[in-house]
Image (tube, rainbow over all chains, first blue to last red; front, top):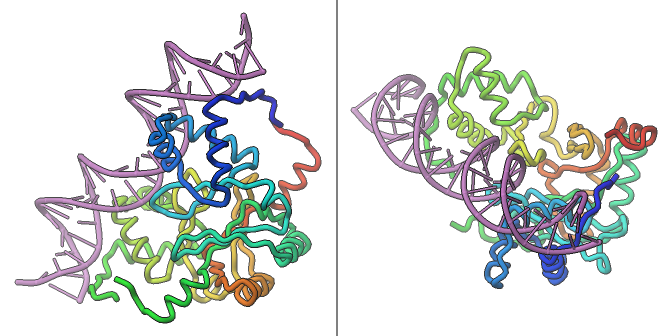
Length: 147
Length: 147
DNA sequence: TTGCGTGCAAAGGTTTTGCATGGCA
DNA sequence: TGCCATGCAAAACCTTTGCACGCAA
């Protein structure tokens, strides 16, 4: 699989160190660049993308396409907290953009069903359930429109 | 809402006529441009995007973000056949990239569970299930690696 | 005749790539 | 010392926008 030996550079460590502070939060590549620039530690755009790609491959970071106009969205997965077991999955609110973590056996039932009946092996880590969160449902119920 | 009076132009009709031939298939804006160019009927890129946007608003077309590198993915919804009911959803194989349509009641159970227990209103149209398709599972089982 | 639709080109944004240099192991 | 990682800039790509003209109603 991974035949290439990979190094741990300072940038990489700084990146991971920061990501560990914001588990579950979603961010774009541009966000990271901006953050490190503000911290006085400029990391090149290409480097950020390359490290993110690597982290996604390693499974430490998830990659989503949520906001159509602001590119890919990433999220660090806290290994102590979440997402290393198959009953964890993510819901993304289309209205407010909130990312909701759920830990629920129901997903395993769906997973099993997909495998048994449709021969599709679900990857709950990568899958994002889109929909509307509770608060946005309520808002939509009361106020019809905003602007 | 739609205060603007909208016209039915020849391009628009040609577009819809073509889309009606490929219900459930997914395509990109570039695909459409290419198709019409090959047919000797060139439609400008901007026009394709503008019409697609309109069709999405009208609910005749769904818009997805599946392939990270090839932009948004659209799909015409055959009102007689598929995808206007909540038991249709999509699976995307992470290995081969195949997009699989499923029409199955199981998704409704999950949908109901999410709403009842987690107050999250699932949007099956927008949600894409990532995982591994049958063939790619078999390949992974026999040959360990390819390259 | 009115005003939306279109084409073209340019601009906007995100992501990738090439290449010389820097840094890890 | 061998390779991988980085930075920079350029390129590639998708998508949107401005403007003059065409065309539907």
